[in-house]
Image (cartoon, rainbow, N blue to C red; front, side, top):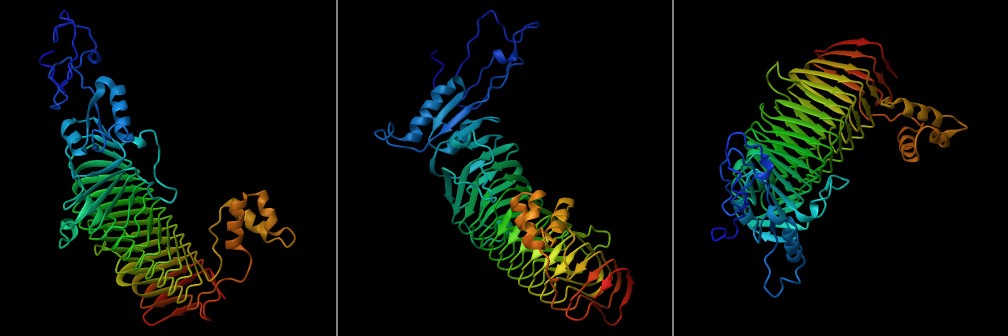
Length: 511
């Protein structure tokens, strides 16, 4: 016992058990030795690693220790953990130094002013998040966190290991070198190597960006807030990757998400709102972005800008009330590159054009593009190939579809100035019942619940078709194929064919 000084733990076995003896049948889980203080495990072929738990609570005075709830609870938890408790600390960085791969650090409520450099595969978790699932709010914002870790100067958290997990903690960054741009700019969380998983946490940088993934760094964020930062909510550059689900990237001074120089981002079920420049900006042929079921609204400039991106997919999302263009796509220069894919979205009430396509290939299908302050769709570029299918374009202030100097364009199955047909079987039945002169709205309840009934009836009630205030389809200097379109009430001109155009019209109606 004289050599067993704290914080060293020793498990003692009978002398008859000789470690390493051939033919010994003692299970590995029965023989465990580990030096907690130095984070090393003694080598033995019969030895298994013991996962440890480290506790961190805010420092308090001797007199206040008994009355401090967090400290008292931490001491109780430490005693309950027994030999699996690696120690009680007042600084998270001290616990990181003492822990080993696979260990867990429980942080009790309070504010910690320090910088964390994570070089081990550990789990960093708020103590009150242990039994909670899905800390993200209903609208994608993270819930309030009882643990705050703040730092001024360099990044608050630097992750350099694979398999790191963080849960239920608020991170705040102040100061930093504000002259740096992009990779050299200030940030709250920086992921440079390995994969980091974060849940129910929030990141804010007073003068920089909330989260930056760079190089071999990869982050998976779920139910997190990347908001109210001095620059961007999320930056991925030079090969950095990020996956965001149920996150809020809002109220940042520049862009909600900025993807450049080979970055890769996937956004699912997120909110990208009220950023003072663009909601999502992606640039460079090596960058890849997929946006699925995301609300991109009320941004001070554009909703989405995809500029010469290697791969860009926008699907099942809402892009509305942005103060400039809703979606602008500047496609790749290479002829063999993947086209921009814009499928199943609602692009409405933007102050300028709904969808702007310039110098690139694009596949646009099953979108509702209505109520925008200028044209619904504008496309131009002498090498561009654009396919517009099964879209609804109504009530735009300018021309519904305006195509200039495009190599080839096809418009098929679109409804311009008329109602959309994007209804499922139940919605279609409900719509028909609502049109009945005697049954009306009340009959929808037989098919759908009340909330869906109200939405269907308000959006699809029988009235005059909503006209675009400009031309229905305008074609200039392009080769076009129009098939199965219905164009109505479009400023008196359904189809305008300008100079140097060749147009093939098959089926459809203009009235």
